[in-house]
Image (cartoon, rainbow, N blue to C red; front, side, top):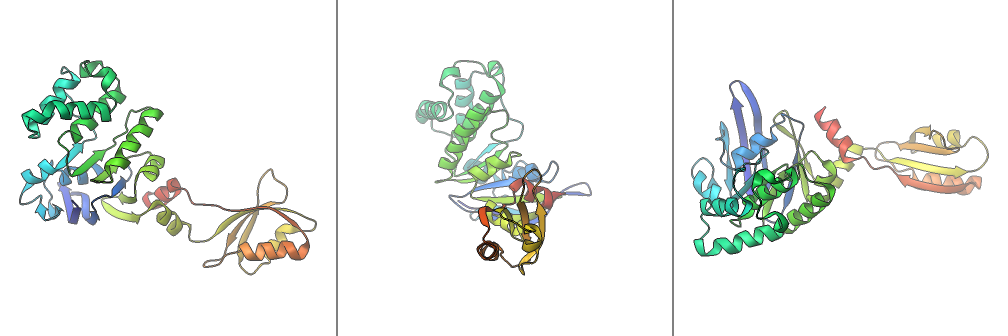
Length: 306
């Protein structure tokens, strides 16, 4: 079941928290939704899940519109909001039973669903505790369990690994990737490495507008623009000057603390790999290393949102 966002705008007074955005998340796709605080991520998710009505535009799950049939959409979505909605005085089992009943799970199926969620979310050791006795990480697991207990076709997860330790993050990441094979998943996170490892595609929103849409590799390539190389060369003479004289090279900078190591930026639409290799052969220099420098996702994010 696809999420289709069409010209969505959400205003609070005169402020546009979300400004005429459109995108689609297809079935079997895990999409990361990134942006700085206040960019419009959580607002978009609240509109998708019918917690808020759009000011303009529409959101559809296939052909079901949030403007015309929000109740049907709610039944098909599992939602973990930014602030995990838990009843602290309830036990884990009682809370999951309560949420299953609210979501319309048939009474005969509820015990099995609770057992599945306790197993999938790693809650077995804690299942008899009250929620107020749990660590933040385990509370987050309970929040994930309530989002999934009715086996929704769409999952909307706002900061799903918030408060988890590194081992728990790896487990939840695996779970989300597995769920993404059958479900439509959109998640937000401030941990960019987590998004890169988990998501098939990344959307970046800034000041209410979508500023990037693509895989992490695509976004890095678009941001990088010009080839960047690190090279190490053993030889005599002015190596830096000889590199700068190559037709494909725009700039050459020495690497601090390393003799005869250089960072080379190629001219637009050019590659210097072959010309550097040929130069070393001609000069009888030893090329000890030549590696491309990839733009990090963090650099892409800063460039698009600053």
